[in-house]
Image 1 (tube, rainbow, N blue to C red):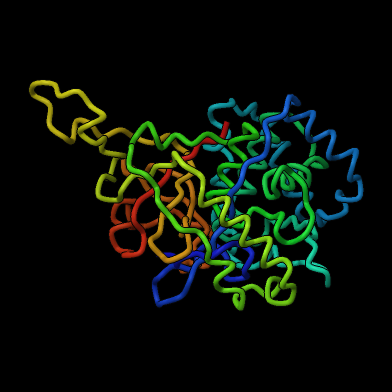
Image 2 (cartoon, helix red, strand yellow):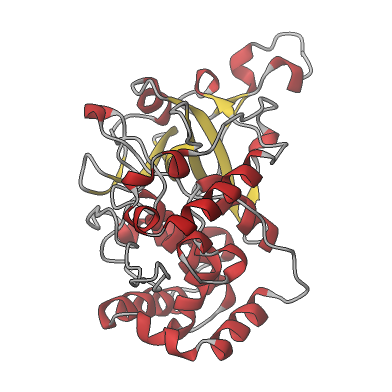
Length: 335
């Protein structure tokens, strides 16, 4: 089992669960205006504006990306099976936290590309980047720009606060861009209510905020804006079954002869599972991908406990039941 997560800006980032009393790290939340440009046009624009960023991708990572893209072309991965084919390639990649903490002395971000060491958030983010590049038929040189688009508010990398530190903001920003779809409302109407302020109330946990007080004020404003977001829902863990999600009674029409378990619906292979937490100041405690084994829903994730990317030994419902601070899930689909 994994530990809880604080914003991914910390080196303990995403996936330190409550097992053993350690913390997890959050991510971020705000939305980028929907533009008229297609994804390929956005990527081309970023590539032309910041050609120097191609040098941010180390040679080993460039080879990994090129190998995945070549494999996709050679095997003609169908759009609906990209994640099925992609995710198993990264099993056993080592879990390493804090790989994004690479700021300069002024608190400005340096773009990090690293597929050789992953935490729960960078695993999901890198798989999302590869998924979209395969769908676009793009080349490996586009990869840093796809990462920048996913990781930074409106795809604009600047100081530390431009990174999407809270998972909720990462979802909202990339949903607005058209890269993700929050499908949780198909399964639940339960509001996801969180006060999100962990970073501004725990600055000592974040060296960049501690060393640059002006950034702390900016982060607090981002958190305040995030707190105004409405309409997000989650699925309480009491409604997660071995095979999928039990719909609440107010979302189904009773049919004679049916039992509640007849209203359990599966997730799609590769759906992103974001795990809500009741830890003060945080929104999401961990995340990974839906994966079925023998008809049972498991979590494919970068695990701090296992020290690598693994498939959970327990079905997701049992995994969540064993962690008190985990309250339920949100389900997000790559578009």
